[in-house]
Amino acid sequence: MKIDDDKEILLELANRIKELRIEKGLTQAVCYEDTGINFGRIERGVRDISFTTLVKICRYFNVSVDEFLKGIF
Image 1 (cartoon, rainbow, N blue to C red):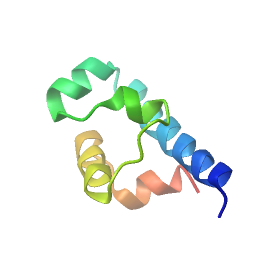
Image 2: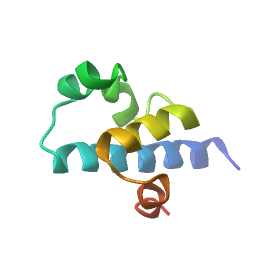
Image 3: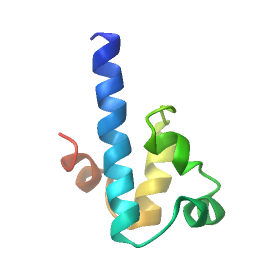
């Protein structure tokens, strides 16, 4: 796997999170206040997230990890 592949995966993850946030009508600031997770960094593809952070984000948006990943792959 190349570095470009890693960046592409991060951007797919970022776009999926942004999509969920916008569907809920939430700002990055509100999401941060609610979770302590910096959505701005994630949505720009700057920050790779851990699995535990992914689970927290899925719980916050009330989607399963499986459902979340279907939107990416």
